[in-house]
Length: 409
Image (cartoon, rainbow, N blue to C red; front, top):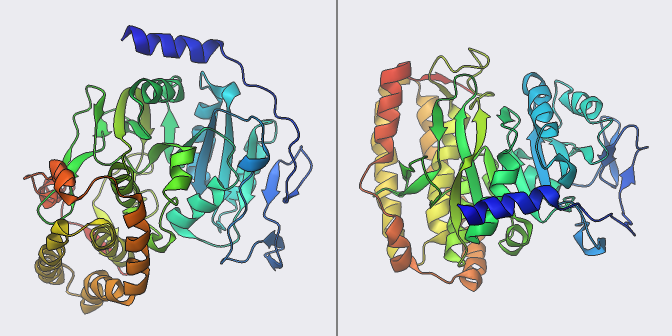
Protein backbone atom coordinates (compact mmCIF):
# COMPACT_ATOMS: atom_id res chain seq x y z
CA UNK A 1 0.00 0.00 0.00
CA UNK A 2 2.94 2.32 0.73
CA UNK A 3 4.23 1.68 -2.79
CA UNK A 4 0.84 2.58 -4.28
CA UNK A 5 0.68 5.75 -2.17
CA UNK A 6 4.12 6.75 -3.41
CA UNK A 7 3.00 6.43 -7.02
CA UNK A 8 -0.12 8.52 -6.34
CA UNK A 9 2.04 11.19 -4.68
CA UNK A 10 4.40 11.26 -7.66
CA UNK A 11 1.51 11.59 -10.10
CA UNK A 12 0.22 14.62 -8.20
CA UNK A 13 3.55 16.42 -8.17
CA UNK A 14 4.70 15.71 -11.72
CA UNK A 15 3.81 18.23 -14.41
CA UNK A 16 3.25 17.43 -18.06
CA UNK A 17 6.02 18.58 -20.42
CA UNK A 18 4.87 21.03 -23.07
CA UNK A 19 3.90 19.73 -26.48
CA UNK A 20 6.15 21.25 -29.11
CA UNK A 21 6.65 20.83 -32.80
CA UNK A 22 3.18 19.39 -33.38
CA UNK A 23 2.25 19.17 -37.04
CA UNK A 24 -0.96 17.51 -38.22
CA UNK A 25 -2.54 16.43 -41.46
CA UNK A 26 -6.04 17.24 -40.18
CA UNK A 27 -8.41 20.13 -40.73
CA UNK A 28 -8.63 21.85 -37.35
CA UNK A 29 -11.09 24.64 -36.63
CA UNK A 30 -10.06 27.68 -34.56
CA UNK A 31 -9.22 26.99 -30.93
CA UNK A 32 -12.47 28.56 -29.78
CA UNK A 33 -14.36 25.69 -31.42
CA UNK A 34 -11.89 22.86 -30.73
CA UNK A 35 -13.66 20.54 -33.16
CA UNK A 36 -11.37 18.30 -35.19
CA UNK A 37 -12.65 17.10 -38.53
CA UNK A 38 -10.95 14.25 -40.33
CA UNK A 39 -9.26 15.37 -43.54
CA UNK A 40 -11.11 13.64 -46.33
CA UNK A 41 -12.46 13.47 -49.84
CA UNK A 42 -16.21 13.79 -49.34
CA UNK A 43 -18.94 15.59 -47.42
CA UNK A 44 -21.46 14.15 -44.95
CA UNK A 45 -24.09 16.61 -43.76
CA UNK A 46 -21.72 19.43 -44.65
CA UNK A 47 -18.81 17.91 -42.70
CA UNK A 48 -15.57 16.65 -44.22
CA UNK A 49 -14.91 13.01 -43.34
CA UNK A 50 -12.42 10.37 -44.43
CA UNK A 51 -13.83 7.51 -46.52
CA UNK A 52 -14.92 4.70 -44.22
CA UNK A 53 -12.33 2.25 -45.54
CA UNK A 54 -9.45 4.40 -44.28
CA UNK A 55 -8.18 5.06 -40.79
CA UNK A 56 -6.92 8.46 -39.71
CA UNK A 57 -3.14 8.47 -39.15
CA UNK A 58 -1.82 8.51 -35.63
CA UNK A 59 -0.39 11.72 -34.22
CA UNK A 60 1.98 9.83 -31.94
CA UNK A 61 5.02 9.64 -34.23
CA UNK A 62 5.21 13.43 -34.57
CA UNK A 63 5.04 14.16 -30.84
CA UNK A 64 7.98 14.54 -28.53
CA UNK A 65 5.71 14.53 -25.49
CA UNK A 66 2.02 14.62 -24.72
CA UNK A 67 -0.65 14.03 -22.11
CA UNK A 68 -0.45 11.10 -19.75
CA UNK A 69 -4.00 9.91 -20.47
CA UNK A 70 -6.22 10.20 -23.54
CA UNK A 71 -9.85 9.85 -22.48
CA UNK A 72 -11.94 8.74 -25.46
CA UNK A 73 -15.71 9.04 -25.22
CA UNK A 74 -17.46 7.42 -28.15
CA UNK A 75 -20.77 9.20 -28.52
CA UNK A 76 -24.05 8.33 -30.18
CA UNK A 77 -27.15 10.25 -29.09
CA UNK A 78 -25.53 10.99 -25.76
CA UNK A 79 -27.16 14.36 -25.04
CA UNK A 80 -28.71 13.26 -21.70
CA UNK A 81 -25.37 12.02 -20.36
CA UNK A 82 -22.48 14.07 -21.74
CA UNK A 83 -22.64 17.09 -19.45
CA UNK A 84 -22.27 15.14 -16.22
CA UNK A 85 -19.65 12.82 -17.72
CA UNK A 86 -17.47 15.70 -18.92
CA UNK A 87 -17.97 17.68 -15.71
CA UNK A 88 -16.59 14.81 -13.62
CA UNK A 89 -13.61 14.54 -15.98
CA UNK A 90 -12.86 18.22 -15.32
CA UNK A 91 -12.85 17.45 -11.59
CA UNK A 92 -10.28 14.67 -11.87
CA UNK A 93 -7.13 15.11 -9.80
CA UNK A 94 -5.17 14.41 -13.01
CA UNK A 95 -7.25 16.80 -15.15
CA UNK A 96 -4.15 18.77 -16.16
CA UNK A 97 -2.42 15.61 -17.40
CA UNK A 98 -5.07 14.30 -19.75
CA UNK A 99 -6.79 15.08 -23.04
CA UNK A 100 -10.45 14.40 -23.76
CA UNK A 101 -11.64 13.28 -27.19
CA UNK A 102 -15.37 12.99 -27.86
CA UNK A 103 -15.74 10.96 -31.06
CA UNK A 104 -19.24 11.21 -32.49
CA UNK A 105 -20.85 8.48 -34.58
CA UNK A 106 -23.04 10.95 -36.54
CA UNK A 107 -25.56 11.36 -33.71
CA UNK A 108 -29.01 12.45 -34.95
CA UNK A 109 -29.60 14.31 -31.64
CA UNK A 110 -26.75 16.77 -32.42
CA UNK A 111 -24.94 15.81 -29.23
CA UNK A 112 -21.66 16.38 -31.08
CA UNK A 113 -22.51 20.07 -31.05
CA UNK A 114 -23.30 19.84 -27.33
CA UNK A 115 -19.90 18.22 -26.74
CA UNK A 116 -18.18 20.99 -28.69
CA UNK A 117 -19.84 23.65 -26.52
CA UNK A 118 -18.97 21.81 -23.30
CA UNK A 119 -15.32 21.49 -24.34
CA UNK A 120 -14.85 24.97 -25.84
CA UNK A 121 -12.80 26.35 -22.92
CA UNK A 122 -10.83 23.13 -22.36
CA UNK A 123 -7.47 23.36 -24.21
CA UNK A 124 -7.03 19.59 -24.15
CA UNK A 125 -10.60 18.78 -25.21
CA UNK A 126 -11.91 18.28 -28.72
CA UNK A 127 -14.72 16.71 -30.72
CA UNK A 128 -14.17 14.43 -33.72
CA UNK A 129 -17.04 13.84 -36.13
CA UNK A 130 -16.72 10.36 -37.63
CA UNK A 131 -19.42 11.01 -40.23
CA UNK A 132 -21.31 7.72 -39.84
CA UNK A 133 -22.28 5.26 -37.11
CA UNK A 134 -19.20 3.04 -37.05
CA UNK A 135 -20.20 1.23 -33.87
CA UNK A 136 -18.17 0.90 -30.70
CA UNK A 137 -15.24 -1.04 -32.09
CA UNK A 138 -14.28 0.89 -35.21
CA UNK A 139 -15.39 4.20 -33.68
CA UNK A 140 -12.90 3.76 -30.84
CA UNK A 141 -10.20 2.65 -33.28
CA UNK A 142 -10.64 5.83 -35.31
CA UNK A 143 -10.63 8.01 -32.20
CA UNK A 144 -7.54 6.26 -30.78
CA UNK A 145 -5.63 7.25 -33.94
CA UNK A 146 -5.87 10.87 -32.71
CA UNK A 147 -4.84 10.08 -29.12
CA UNK A 148 -1.47 11.30 -27.82
CA UNK A 149 -1.53 9.85 -24.31
CA UNK A 150 0.57 7.08 -22.82
CA UNK A 151 -2.71 5.50 -21.69
CA UNK A 152 -6.10 5.29 -23.38
CA UNK A 153 -9.26 5.39 -21.29
CA UNK A 154 -12.20 4.21 -23.39
CA UNK A 155 -15.28 5.53 -21.66
CA UNK A 156 -19.02 5.25 -22.24
CA UNK A 157 -20.93 8.52 -22.19
CA UNK A 158 -23.50 7.28 -19.62
CA UNK A 159 -20.90 7.34 -16.83
CA UNK A 160 -19.56 9.69 -14.19
CA UNK A 161 -16.26 9.40 -12.32
CA UNK A 162 -15.28 9.95 -8.72
CA UNK A 163 -12.49 12.57 -8.43
CA UNK A 164 -9.50 10.22 -8.00
CA UNK A 165 -10.63 7.60 -10.50
CA UNK A 166 -7.99 8.22 -13.16
CA UNK A 167 -5.22 8.86 -10.65
CA UNK A 168 -5.93 5.54 -8.96
CA UNK A 169 -6.09 3.71 -12.28
CA UNK A 170 -2.66 4.99 -13.29
CA UNK A 171 -1.19 4.20 -9.88
CA UNK A 172 -2.47 0.62 -9.81
CA UNK A 173 -1.45 -0.06 -13.39
CA UNK A 174 2.08 1.21 -12.75
CA UNK A 175 2.32 -0.75 -9.50
CA UNK A 176 1.17 -4.01 -11.10
CA UNK A 177 2.69 -3.67 -14.58
CA UNK A 178 -0.69 -4.48 -16.17
CA UNK A 179 -1.48 -3.56 -19.75
CA UNK A 180 -5.25 -3.29 -19.22
CA UNK A 181 -7.27 -2.23 -16.20
CA UNK A 182 -10.81 -1.42 -15.23
CA UNK A 183 -12.22 0.61 -12.33
CA UNK A 184 -14.88 -0.66 -9.98
CA UNK A 185 -18.15 0.07 -11.80
CA UNK A 186 -21.07 1.15 -9.62
CA UNK A 187 -24.70 1.91 -10.43
CA UNK A 188 -25.33 5.40 -11.75
CA UNK A 189 -27.64 6.51 -8.92
CA UNK A 190 -27.32 4.44 -5.74
CA UNK A 191 -23.68 3.34 -5.89
CA UNK A 192 -24.43 -0.39 -5.64
CA UNK A 193 -21.75 -2.51 -7.29
CA UNK A 194 -22.59 -3.13 -10.94
CA UNK A 195 -19.44 -4.85 -12.20
CA UNK A 196 -15.87 -5.64 -11.27
CA UNK A 197 -15.03 -7.32 -14.55
CA UNK A 198 -15.17 -11.00 -15.40
CA UNK A 199 -12.96 -13.65 -13.84
CA UNK A 200 -13.34 -16.20 -16.64
CA UNK A 201 -15.51 -18.05 -19.15
CA UNK A 202 -17.93 -20.95 -18.71
CA UNK A 203 -18.26 -24.33 -20.46
CA UNK A 204 -20.00 -22.64 -23.38
CA UNK A 205 -17.32 -19.99 -23.83
CA UNK A 206 -19.49 -17.22 -22.39
CA UNK A 207 -18.16 -14.76 -19.84
CA UNK A 208 -18.83 -15.95 -16.32
CA UNK A 209 -17.63 -15.66 -12.76
CA UNK A 210 -17.94 -11.95 -11.91
CA UNK A 211 -14.86 -10.77 -10.06
CA UNK A 212 -14.95 -9.74 -6.40
CA UNK A 213 -14.75 -5.95 -6.15
CA UNK A 214 -13.04 -5.62 -2.79
CA UNK A 215 -9.36 -5.94 -3.79
CA UNK A 216 -6.91 -5.35 -6.62
CA UNK A 217 -6.68 -8.56 -8.61
CA UNK A 218 -6.04 -10.07 -12.01
CA UNK A 219 -9.27 -10.55 -13.97
CA UNK A 220 -10.00 -12.11 -17.34
CA UNK A 221 -11.98 -9.29 -18.99
CA UNK A 222 -12.32 -5.60 -18.14
CA UNK A 223 -15.68 -3.83 -17.82
CA UNK A 224 -16.86 -2.66 -21.24
CA UNK A 225 -17.96 0.87 -20.23
CA UNK A 226 -14.53 1.80 -18.85
CA UNK A 227 -11.39 0.16 -20.27
CA UNK A 228 -7.98 1.60 -19.38
CA UNK A 229 -5.22 0.45 -21.76
CA UNK A 230 -1.58 1.17 -22.39
CA UNK A 231 -1.62 2.92 -25.76
CA UNK A 232 1.34 0.92 -27.09
CA UNK A 233 -0.43 -2.35 -26.23
CA UNK A 234 -3.63 -1.19 -27.93
CA UNK A 235 -1.70 -0.55 -31.14
CA UNK A 236 0.40 -3.71 -30.89
CA UNK A 237 -2.72 -5.85 -30.60
CA UNK A 238 -4.39 -4.03 -33.48
CA UNK A 239 -7.06 -2.30 -31.40
CA UNK A 240 -10.61 -3.63 -31.47
CA UNK A 241 -11.88 -5.81 -34.27
CA UNK A 242 -13.92 -3.36 -36.35
CA UNK A 243 -16.13 -6.19 -37.62
CA UNK A 244 -17.65 -6.60 -34.15
CA UNK A 245 -19.47 -3.24 -34.33
CA UNK A 246 -21.07 -3.65 -30.87
CA UNK A 247 -20.75 -6.04 -27.91
CA UNK A 248 -18.03 -8.55 -27.10
CA UNK A 249 -15.21 -6.20 -28.13
CA UNK A 250 -13.67 -6.03 -24.66
CA UNK A 251 -13.88 -9.86 -24.42
CA UNK A 252 -11.98 -10.23 -27.68
CA UNK A 253 -9.38 -7.58 -26.80
CA UNK A 254 -8.69 -8.86 -23.27
CA UNK A 255 -8.34 -12.45 -24.53
CA UNK A 256 -5.68 -11.19 -26.94
CA UNK A 257 -4.01 -9.18 -24.17
CA UNK A 258 -3.65 -12.23 -21.89
CA UNK A 259 -2.66 -14.48 -24.78
CA UNK A 260 0.10 -12.07 -25.85
CA UNK A 261 1.65 -12.05 -22.37
CA UNK A 262 0.03 -8.92 -20.94
CA UNK A 263 -2.19 -8.69 -17.86
CA UNK A 264 -5.68 -7.35 -17.05
CA UNK A 265 -6.50 -6.09 -13.56
CA UNK A 266 -9.34 -4.66 -11.50
CA UNK A 267 -8.38 -1.40 -9.76
CA UNK A 268 -11.09 -1.20 -7.05
CA UNK A 269 -9.82 2.04 -5.53
CA UNK A 270 -10.77 3.72 -8.85
CA UNK A 271 -14.54 4.17 -8.80
CA UNK A 272 -16.89 4.96 -11.67
CA UNK A 273 -20.69 5.06 -11.97
CA UNK A 274 -22.51 3.67 -15.01
CA UNK A 275 -26.14 3.68 -16.14
CA UNK A 276 -25.83 0.85 -18.67
CA UNK A 277 -27.91 -0.11 -21.74
CA UNK A 278 -29.01 3.51 -22.08
CA UNK A 279 -29.71 3.19 -25.80
CA UNK A 280 -31.54 -0.13 -25.92
CA UNK A 281 -33.22 0.20 -22.50
CA UNK A 282 -33.89 3.93 -21.93
CA UNK A 283 -36.95 3.75 -19.68
CA UNK A 284 -36.29 5.00 -16.15
CA UNK A 285 -33.70 7.58 -17.26
CA UNK A 286 -30.85 7.29 -14.70
CA UNK A 287 -32.14 4.05 -13.17
CA UNK A 288 -32.85 0.82 -15.08
CA UNK A 289 -36.40 -0.27 -14.29
CA UNK A 290 -37.08 -3.06 -16.79
CA UNK A 291 -35.36 -5.88 -18.65
CA UNK A 292 -35.35 -4.82 -22.31
CA UNK A 293 -33.34 -5.97 -25.29
CA UNK A 294 -33.69 -6.04 -29.08
CA UNK A 295 -33.25 -8.40 -32.00
CA UNK A 296 -30.14 -6.51 -33.11
CA UNK A 297 -28.53 -6.46 -29.67
CA UNK A 298 -28.99 -10.22 -29.30
CA UNK A 299 -27.64 -10.75 -32.84
CA UNK A 300 -24.37 -8.91 -32.12
CA UNK A 301 -23.97 -10.43 -28.66
CA UNK A 302 -24.51 -13.98 -29.95
CA UNK A 303 -22.41 -13.59 -33.09
CA UNK A 304 -19.49 -11.86 -31.39
CA UNK A 305 -19.06 -14.36 -28.55
CA UNK A 306 -18.75 -17.05 -31.21
CA UNK A 307 -16.23 -14.91 -33.09
CA UNK A 308 -14.09 -14.54 -29.96
CA UNK A 309 -13.68 -18.32 -29.74
CA UNK A 310 -13.22 -18.83 -33.47
CA UNK A 311 -10.54 -16.14 -33.72
CA UNK A 312 -8.56 -16.63 -30.52
CA UNK A 313 -8.74 -20.31 -29.52
CA UNK A 314 -5.61 -22.19 -30.45
CA UNK A 315 -7.07 -25.72 -30.72
CA UNK A 316 -8.44 -27.19 -27.48
CA UNK A 317 -10.87 -24.37 -26.72
CA UNK A 318 -12.40 -24.62 -30.19
CA UNK A 319 -14.38 -27.49 -28.62
CA UNK A 320 -16.49 -24.81 -26.92
CA UNK A 321 -17.84 -23.60 -30.27
CA UNK A 322 -20.32 -26.48 -30.90
CA UNK A 323 -21.37 -26.32 -27.25
CA UNK A 324 -22.14 -22.61 -27.60
CA UNK A 325 -24.08 -23.19 -30.83
CA UNK A 326 -26.13 -25.90 -29.09
CA UNK A 327 -26.88 -23.49 -26.25
CA UNK A 328 -27.98 -20.84 -28.74
CA UNK A 329 -30.31 -23.38 -30.33
CA UNK A 330 -31.97 -24.17 -27.00
CA UNK A 331 -32.20 -20.49 -26.16
CA UNK A 332 -33.75 -19.73 -29.55
CA UNK A 333 -36.57 -22.18 -28.80
CA UNK A 334 -37.21 -20.56 -25.42
CA UNK A 335 -37.16 -17.04 -26.87
CA UNK A 336 -39.46 -18.13 -29.67
CA UNK A 337 -42.04 -19.17 -27.09
CA UNK A 338 -41.56 -15.87 -25.26
CA UNK A 339 -41.68 -13.50 -28.23
CA UNK A 340 -43.86 -15.57 -30.60
CA UNK A 341 -41.88 -13.99 -33.45
CA UNK A 342 -40.01 -15.99 -36.07
CA UNK A 343 -38.21 -12.78 -37.07
CA UNK A 344 -36.52 -12.68 -33.65
CA UNK A 345 -35.19 -16.23 -33.96
CA UNK A 346 -34.01 -15.56 -37.52
CA UNK A 347 -32.23 -12.29 -36.68
CA UNK A 348 -30.85 -12.97 -33.20
CA UNK A 349 -29.82 -16.62 -33.60
CA UNK A 350 -29.81 -18.00 -37.14
CA UNK A 351 -28.17 -14.94 -38.69
CA UNK A 352 -25.67 -14.76 -35.83
CA UNK A 353 -24.41 -18.29 -36.54
CA UNK A 354 -24.65 -17.98 -40.33
CA UNK A 355 -22.69 -14.72 -40.36
CA UNK A 356 -19.81 -16.42 -38.56
CA UNK A 357 -19.63 -18.77 -41.53
CA UNK A 358 -19.84 -15.86 -43.97
CA UNK A 359 -16.96 -14.20 -42.09
CA UNK A 360 -14.73 -17.27 -42.36
CA UNK A 361 -12.09 -15.43 -44.43
CA UNK A 362 -11.88 -12.68 -41.81
CA UNK A 363 -11.64 -15.32 -39.07
CA UNK A 364 -8.77 -17.10 -40.86
CA UNK A 365 -6.94 -13.81 -41.40
CA UNK A 366 -7.35 -12.95 -37.72
CA UNK A 367 -6.15 -16.39 -36.62
CA UNK A 368 -2.97 -15.91 -38.66
CA UNK A 369 -2.44 -12.48 -37.11
CA UNK A 370 -3.16 -13.77 -33.60
CA UNK A 371 -0.68 -16.63 -34.06
CA UNK A 372 2.13 -14.08 -34.31
CA UNK A 373 1.08 -12.47 -31.02
CA UNK A 374 0.52 -15.67 -29.04
CA UNK A 375 2.65 -16.27 -25.95
CA UNK A 376 0.14 -18.46 -24.10
CA UNK A 377 -1.79 -21.37 -25.59
CA UNK A 378 -5.16 -22.91 -24.77
CA UNK A 379 -3.82 -25.06 -21.94
CA UNK A 380 -2.58 -21.92 -20.19
CA UNK A 381 -5.90 -20.13 -20.85
CA UNK A 382 -7.79 -22.95 -19.10
CA UNK A 383 -7.01 -21.18 -15.81
CA UNK A 384 -9.91 -18.87 -16.70
CA UNK A 385 -12.46 -21.69 -17.11
CA UNK A 386 -15.30 -21.37 -14.57
CA UNK A 387 -18.04 -23.85 -13.65
CA UNK A 388 -20.61 -21.14 -12.96
CA UNK A 389 -22.75 -20.63 -16.07
CA UNK A 390 -23.23 -17.24 -17.67
CA UNK A 391 -26.96 -17.78 -18.13
CA UNK A 392 -27.44 -18.13 -14.36
CA UNK A 393 -26.82 -14.38 -14.21
CA UNK A 394 -29.56 -13.85 -16.82
CA UNK A 395 -32.01 -15.87 -14.76
CA UNK A 396 -31.26 -13.73 -11.71
CA UNK A 397 -31.94 -10.61 -13.79
CA UNK A 398 -35.30 -12.10 -14.81
CA UNK A 399 -36.13 -12.48 -11.13
CA UNK A 400 -35.25 -8.84 -10.42
CA UNK A 401 -36.65 -7.07 -13.50
CA UNK A 402 -39.03 -9.61 -15.03
CA UNK A 403 -38.93 -11.41 -18.37
CA UNK A 404 -37.21 -9.43 -21.13
CA UNK A 405 -39.17 -7.18 -23.47
CA UNK A 406 -37.73 -7.71 -26.95
CA UNK A 407 -37.92 -4.90 -29.51
CA UNK A 408 -38.08 -5.85 -33.18
CA UNK A 409 -35.19 -3.64 -34.22
